[in-house]
Length: 51
Image 1 (tube, rainbow, N blue to C red):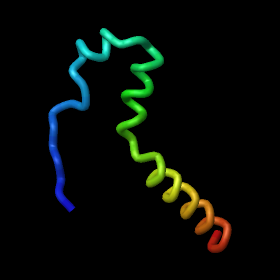
Image 2 (image 1 turned 90 degrees about the horizontal axis):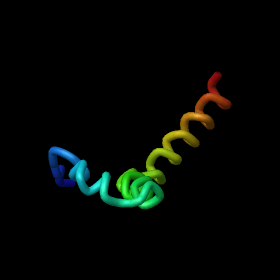
Image 3 (image 1 turned 180 degrees about the vertical axis):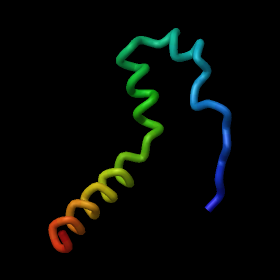
């Protein structure tokens, strides 16, 4: 797996120029929600069985 490094996701001027609803969509589309959800579910299952 390769790692891509960039200084920022968006140019601040680009974020100021788009509408607020598009602003949220642009930011949230960069986040891998599936990975976060899987970790959350696994954590909850682990707590139920071993706590």
